[in-house]
Length: 278
Image (tube, rainbow, N blue to C red; front, side, top):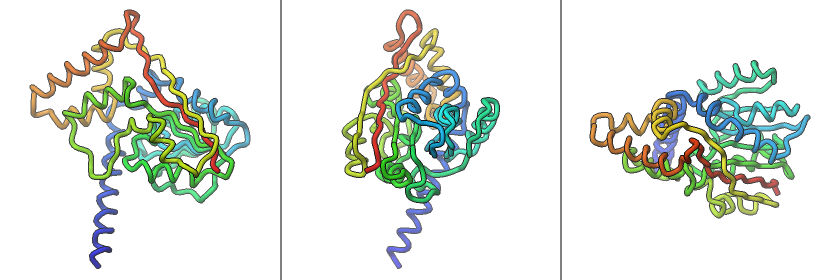
């Protein structure tokens, strides 16, 4: 009886956590982030996974289709799965505008609603890295891939710009729930190799840099305050403390200054991983 109670409580807590995650990504304007800041990243991942016509492809934590849409353009049959229905709605519209057919389905990266060995390619573009329980998410990525199929990931690194941004926000953010792991760990090659382990073969990992443009440091800070869910949530948590808001404003400004060159360019480091399900 005690065990059942703990299990029920854990399930309820997990459901509440996932609901908060979905709500967070629906805040602001993540579609603008995907469209204006990182539009090329999905295509890079699709190319690395060698997605081809006739394949069954799953984009996990797909957002608005940064990888799903270029995958569909190859002629592959694509399913785009995400926790946030608001992002799926935008993705449906973008796919229609692009003239490609994609199945948009709400789903949890840690409990994908698909049978074992359903897809030739399972990929995630800076998406699955935000699932709080890395082991569960990694196991699901492999589970739904067919033997010999490809698992592909693009994840921000801990030492890269976005990893540093999360480190900058951490002192001002609410503590993570018990058991949740930091998203940028997915950008650490040793962590990903440990997660996937013997479930995969032929794993390759390469650090790359995505070119990003903001005219001024303030442009980056103000855009992310307005558009990026994790940043919005962090600011909401300190809204009653003007000193904390001012300190975080200054810290994000300093971070952007450190990375912007004279032409308004930044390089955002990410880890590109491909592997084959064993």
